[in-house]
Image 1 (cartoon, rainbow, N blue to C red):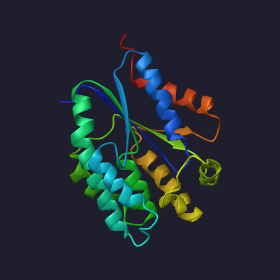
Image 2: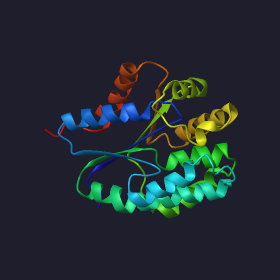
Image 3: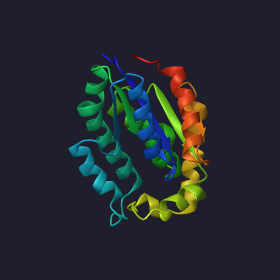
Image 4: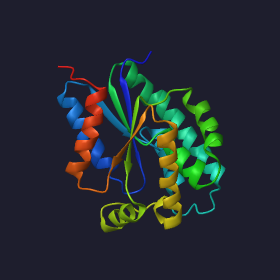
Length: 212
């Protein structure tokens, strides 16, 4: 039984998800919520091993369906081992990427089909969807500029995709935001972090009330 609240943060490369999640965790904790954050692919040992395979720059021959299935496998293990137990304990769980990443990247940008990738992932997540998904919308050019400007960030296989690919990813997210408007909210992430988080906080305040 889900007692907690499941939040996900989505966006193209360089959208600022990590910084936003750090602020979300701090803010919701200040409201008295037991808050935990994680990432996909990854978050637990088995999923981190799958992540290493997916993002390895040497794996240029990885076929689209293989990629989609690996993401779904990682997601399943993360869900049963970490997400569901946390929600059962009443925690607020914030995840850096979840099912919408697969729909945007593999379903739309890779051309596998949003509904086809959704079917794969519905088997993996057993109908466990986020309560709220915050999509950080940034121009792909700006996102990639941010990535390459940071010397502390490792460049992975997806970062090396063409600008056209990343533009398709954004198109995919915009389609998803319309299709799942009941849970996905779009936030302009082109500004500075203070501005971005103020917009994020407005959505959080509408959905999650102070606990203390």
